[in-house]
Amino acid sequence: MSSTAGWNGAKPRIIFVNRYFFPDISATSQMLTDLTFGLAARDFDVHVICSRQLYDAPTARLAAHGREAGVHVHRVWTSRFGRASLAGRAIDYATFYLFCGARLLRLTRRGDVVVAKTDPPLISIVALWIARIRGASLVNWLQDVFPETATRLGTIRLPRWADAALRALRDASLRGARMNVVLGSRMRDFVTPRLSSSGQVSVIENWADERAISPRPTAASGLRARLGLGTRFVVGYSGNLGRVHEFDTLLDAAIRLERDPRVAFLMIGGGAGMSRLREAVAARGLRNFVFQPYQPRESLADSLAAADVHLVSLIPRLEGLVVPSKFYGILAAARPVIFVGDPDGELARVIAARGIGAVIDAGDGATLAAHLERYAADPALREAAGGAAHACYRESFTFERALYRWIELLQPV
Image (cartoon, rainbow, N blue to C red):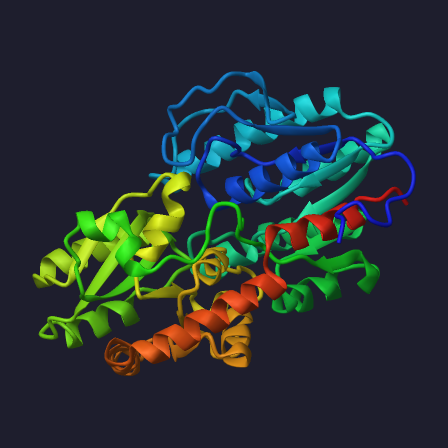
């Protein structure tokens, strides 16, 4: 099916707003890069307003202006404190609000569509105000829901009046949008009561790019060979292990499996949780872990192929607010998924319905260890779950499918 089927009339100019963009490798940046490059390839006039930073290199100073794969890139100045402290992050956010808002005000014109992501949080408030002034329309693309994510994590403790004010402003930016794109049914259920109409919300899941990730046998993984993992049963984690992810269950299972020479845990990526996990592993003297930094995107298929099964986790109280995007790459790589979190969560529902892995309650390390032993002992079980995972991916989570839905959504109203 052509991704432009059903298009009527002239294509509007699309202006995306997000702190990070190509060549940044963070999840939100990769999703934005895929979508904007795909739209530009189909003759949309696409602009991105972002910072000059990289997610893992806050002192980076990328060029202020550029053109990437047909996308006009406008990089604004921000402070560069990075993610090491909440205070520094808040200052980075504030400067992005200011200079991004000024650039968006100058760039936007009547008839444009402004697409606001959620990094930094609440940028939709600024985007709605400018869209109204300029006669443009707003689409919110919610990768997470703020301030609820921060308050449920306990990372920010605002006075009750300030929390209520932020939620009221955020809700107004949702109601004022032409459309709010969310990542799943749980997030849709959370957002819908805050809208003027249920027609203001659309579910478009994140994806994996089939051009970058395809199924490979573990024996074909160069990373696995370089790390000397051989014929061991490798449990993989790939991407950010941040504050929203749960790792105590994984650590408990690893302790239980420490004396099983078959099993190794390959942790690829970074984040606050990854640092804490590395410290916990060192403190306990565990030898069944291998840690690796983020891998280049062009090596993602190889690094995903290094593991026999992959883990995904989410703190249960964040269901409806966050959907881990690493899930889709795992499906594209045809690997079983073991999810640790709410058994009625967004990803848990897919895993259970499609038979693509296992769902483990957060905190139940014994059951996780038992499932890993079962997968380690049964290659046929791994192959069946991996095949089901790839079939699920092809049916529901390809980039082409998501691009088609975005193009339909962006049609002039």
